[in-house]
Length: 198
Image 1 (cartoon, rainbow, N blue to C red):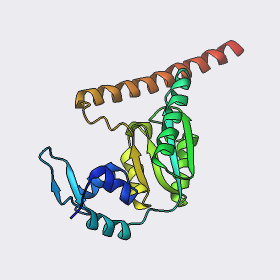
Image 2 (cartoon, rainbow, N blue to C red; image 1 turned 90 degrees about the vertical axis):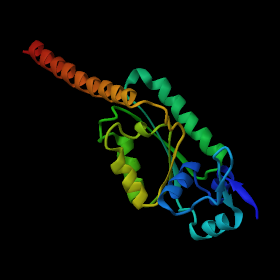
Image 3 (tube, rainbow, N blue to C red; image 1 turned 45 degrees about the vertical axis):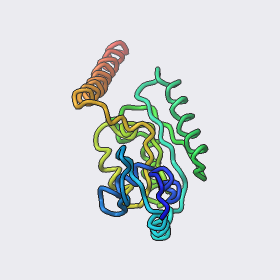
Image 4 (cartoon, rainbow, N blue to C red; image 1 turned 180 degrees about the horizontal axis):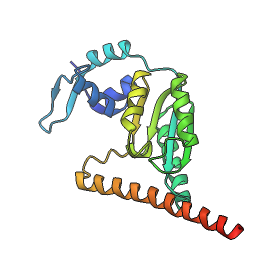
């Protein structure tokens, strides 16, 4: 009986390691055993049967990169390059990178709207992100629910499981303050321009 590591099993099935962990939690595909160190091991024949039962969805691999402001333009390029390199190294086909510049609270960004349209048209097999909050700061669960309905695999490069609750709350608060400050000062700037024009 040949046993496979979680990485080998993921390669055999054409899915991400995170997808196998999720399938384990859902009871869809459980490991045969664990090593002394706690690592999952899958039976080769069980994995092969799962590979036959769950063929990869047809469609493109979409990479989504986002930063919040114009002064992060270089970070946006770096993020997009990293996503594309990961996809090429993983052997994914038909790779396309969508970039957005805007707040994680803004649902109307052109790139995000296009990404959603591509998923709804069933053109996407896989979505690749650097971190979960690159998609949206709040409400990302809704989009992840939509992609699950359309059988779109999600690959997240930096899961950052060690971030504390306080750290995540602080990051959320900073994002909210940044957005509202921008709106407030933008509104004042428009008022000042109108006053000067009179």
